[in-house]
Image (cartoon, rainbow, N blue to C red):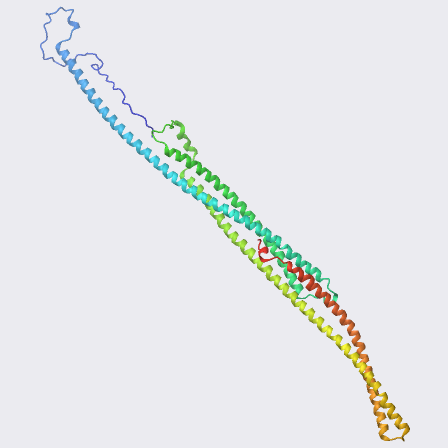
Length: 429
């Protein structure tokens, strides 16, 4: 409200008496006796007043003075009351304005604090997402080693000898591992893209809040300076056109809604960031666990396959003992046939010297029968040995095949699988 001083306007009285003009009231009859018209020359009569006129004029002046004095007192009382009222009203409005400025400062401080809190939270979220992005990238890089190992194992196993090229459990588990790694790599890339997008959104939201916070900071300083102005402040000035700027500013409702919308947007992004961070943790945990589980399955399949190869080699080597036993059997049969030569010579010598006797003839027939049976058994043994020789060539070839396969499985593939990344490496640490 303007602090203009109300000054009473000068009172203008248009009465002739007030203006110093003497007029005669024809209706007033003077109570004093009129002087004789003959007591003075006729030329001096017109320049003088009668006592009645003098008294009338004198009383009129007194009456007007009394009236003006009363009016002046009334004006003074009204002026004093108006001054007191305007002073009280001015002080009231100024105090109300100061109080409203204080309320405004509290509102600005509250919203500025809320903005600062969300700005800090968004900064924490951005840094956390940046760390998770780095973990995702490291985890993605770490999957290249298992992929290289699995594909190398499949390539090495193609160099197994022909009898051992089978689609066994090891190959099935290796193919599962390759597919799993490809799926995990695609998932890690998609998750990384989501994290990058959320980081950009958080940065944009943070910048929006920072601009709003900067406006609040400047507004707080200005309103704080306004609240410190007093009537005795030496730096106050007249700014008559300052009220015209009110048409260019927002109202409190729109001002509050603008900041509330910004904070709502920030809250939404904070919740989205939290959900995404939990998703990243689950993705890294699940992919790491799946890779290690599949790695264990492949290693178990390799171990079982190696045990099968070792057992097959052992069984094939036992067949070599059959050949040696048959060879010893043939030597024994040959020796048995040779041992029949002496008894045969003896019995035949007896028959030559002594006349023929039935017992000697029977003995000779028995020796010939024994030799025949021994020779037949020797022939069978030699035939069996020939088959055993052929079988030995096949078994030795198969043993060499199994040894080569075992070398590929155990010394090549399983040794390389020892370079499989650890849990922490697969988790991106």
